[in-house]
Image (tube, rainbow, N blue to C red; front, side, top):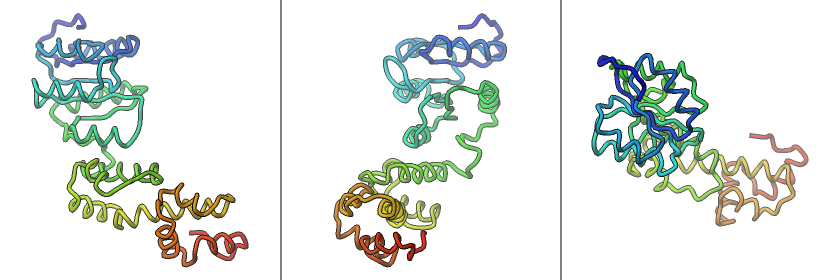
Length: 251
């Protein structure tokens, strides 16, 4: 812990295994907060005997991960606000952070000014627990992360059940919420992305059509052909012929 004796200062539990990063954060916060430091899961658990007002946790720890530690902390301090720090950036982590109701999810390298701002808001009682100020609600943020996840992973086995589970919703709520947010059903959204990528491959590569279908995520060539026709009005083979002659405009 830093050497500040003020009893009026809020207490922060900082869990970061990188000594340089941990020292940088402590130096930046020591005039405003009492900081209890830990380099991993075990040390952090030992610090829970102190009065803690907020946990600032790195996602990657040598003996666990930040969410496992947060789960343990919540057993002792259910209402403790937490901020997850990570050098990794993907939609799955963002959604996981939202599902565990962290107060914020901050990417590394840290912007100390932003960290100070968020700590002040959260510990000052002004926090509304939205991770992003650019969205109207937690649910909308989750759905935006889901659509980004689809766009990056359209070629994988993305099912309605998997994505509903990822969003922590039942099938019915996910379908309704997704359509409201995206303006189309999950199936239509996924098919549109897949066939547009298939069209690019047909236009720019000499790959076999069956290989293209499998590459963009279809397991059945007949199904791929049907979806492609519905979107472009012609079969994939015909599209390849016509687009090479610039008869079909790009969508």
